[in-house]
Image 1 (tube, rainbow, N blue to C red):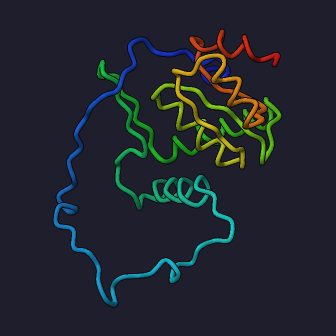
Image 2: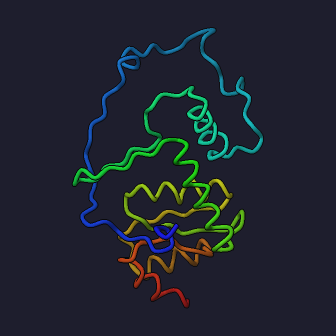
Length: 178
C-alpha cells in the first residue's frame, strides 16, 4: 500500500474526453410499464446498506463463480493512453487493503472524517470505496484548493486524516498545525 502512503501524481494527467457506445442489447431499451414496473417500496432494501459489501463484493463473488462476463469493474484512461482496468475481484481486494490501511495503520474508525484531495486517478476510487467499506466519512476536494481553502474544509469537517498528492503536500503541511 505504498502508493497510498506516498501517492505520486503521474505526469500530464488531464481530463480525457472519451465517447462510450452502448452495448447492442441496450440500444433498444423498452421502458417498463404497468405490471412490469416495480416500485422502490417493493424491493427488499437492507436496513443498513453498504455499497462496498452489498454491491462490489456481490459482483466479485459473481466473477469468482463465473456468473459474470469479462468486462472490467473500473476502466480508467488518461490523455496519454495509459489505462488501468480492474475486475470486481481486484477492486474488492484493493479497497479492502485500503480500508485496512485506514483502520489499522492510520487508526481511523467508523464515523471519522477523511479529506480526499486527489486528481482524476483510479486511486480516488480505492480511497472512496475503502472509506465506504469502513464507515469513514469521506470529504472530496479539488486539487485546485489553496492552503486557506484546505484549512477551512479541514476545520469545518473535523477531518482526522487527509489523502493527497505530493504536489499539494506543502499546502496541507502549511495549515496542519492549525
